[in-house]
Image (cartoon, rainbow, N blue to C red):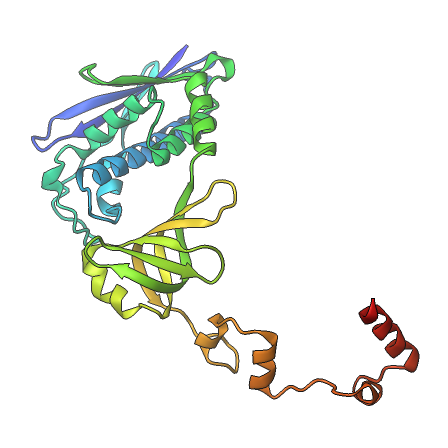
Length: 317
């Protein structure tokens, strides 16, 4: 039994290239397959294509940080086209990517067929032993959502011309899940800390967070002035953060935005929170003076003679 879904890429000449997604399993046919599985197929494939498009953009635009979300979203957008007997056929089309509402600065002339390239990258990754971690997570999620392997279910993706194809089966699902468990975790997040140094030729910096080891920072050239202004100041850094898979300690961040951290709601200067002082330094600064004579322990701390004797007995040991 098989359920067939077709997807199409609309190129600059307005010729659509169909992409077929074929689910094969014991109950994968119209009238038997759960409607939720069809929805998971469409949404999961869209997310996997977005991940693949992201890897294409990063590879083609080396040295340029940022993930160009408008380009990636457009390249992976699916549009429903209809249903045929015995199959479900849907299409997605690559729109005019020359301009986008989000003001994305990515020049699409560099990658005119981003959706097609993303599909090719996706199907090749099924057989890769070292896929892009972001794409591997999307493939693993797609396999998990569709429960690939249960009841012999597989997902086969084929381009209309048959030049690109790949099969997501149980072995691929298991391999992708094992692979991502060993990879650093990446997600959009916010780190707070102070930049202790920056290299404006390589567009890198070193961030010392409130806790933990230093974090490597990469930033686009247009943010160089803002980065310089934030040197040695407590700042919020927003971007794609990579975490150690075991400890979840931040390792690096691809910077998208930075802003001054909100002052602490305390009756102290916000910068002083980040200064490390000894107990003696704090005592001198705040005018705190401990008991200087044994007799003071009776009055200052309201201790009994027995408690004082017990205290000094421990000290003498």
